[in-house]
Image (tube, rainbow, N blue to C red; front, side, top):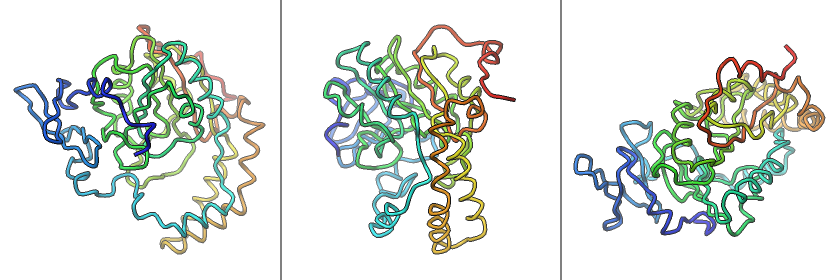
Length: 322
């Protein structure tokens, strides 16, 4: 496990039962709920707690005890395929993320000189996250429903196994499209954030299905903003623009003609070589009104608030050209 994402003893004390939110005790490499009416046990696998509410999750604890593939298959990833993929030009570009994370770090460090940040869906390093990892005073707790190089905790975002008011900030990047109930997950984020805590989210709009069966939802700009209506907005907008959206559509159009692994690999390579240049338009288009209607994905950074954005106010925030 990456040393940057191991949580401290003080953070471990904030853990709670994902079933009933009662305190946990650690006994013989297992966490046990202290609530007599619950008493659910949660194993620790390779030093990683498996804190999943099986009654409210599409994953089971057994999936992780058996090292079953969930959302990512990092163990069997082909090194040759990865090498060839890295040689080809990519069709993705996240224009805003690095700048957003720099701003995010500044805001969070003003709240607390030694902040605790929870990452949901963080088994692998999110794009642009280097400004967060480079600050020694930031404690990062990286969670996911998959084992990976950055996984410190296995949990489902529908039932985050931490007490109320535990974190200074939560990051949920490229995750909300992969959960069954995004509203519940954002509610959980709100619950575990401290007063004035910060959330940073990125969620796709114009992207085809990725991660196979674990892909459920897309959001427009206003739909994404409404999801975070219990937060005061600090910044929001397109993160990945229309150029990337067009490149994705072109690639998936070509992929619809093939149905085997070899064919898909060849088509993806051809699509990259013939459409990678489209993404460069996004450096020009990303802040244009049209991008709010046609972006590949949006970001939102906000502060936990007691005030709820009304739907009438929401409509006034439209920035597109329709």
